[in-house]
Length: 82
Image 1: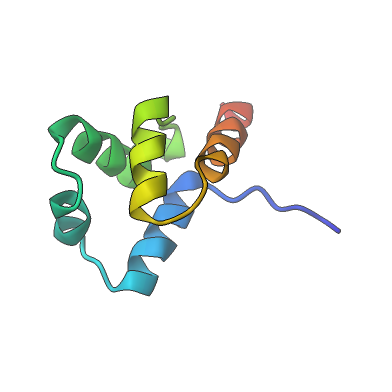
Image 2: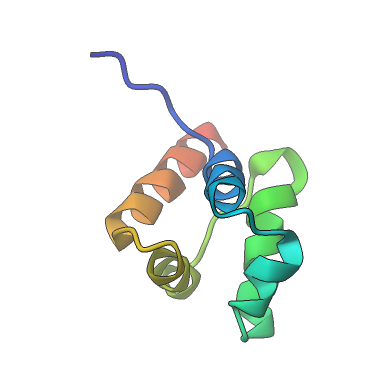
């Protein structure tokens, strides 16, 4: 099986699309401005170089109902590209 590295920004965009969420919908579900900023940078940051901190990764994993391991793996893949 060939594993393709999936950029964090694409994952977040697809999850939002599936849920039919706009940016405003996502941010309204993230009441902490720091998490809102981190999510924005993860989606729209320059050259997909944004790495989530552990806190934001946990918040997003709960929000999208996925394991925090998923975001850990996406972050590790981002780091390898830098």
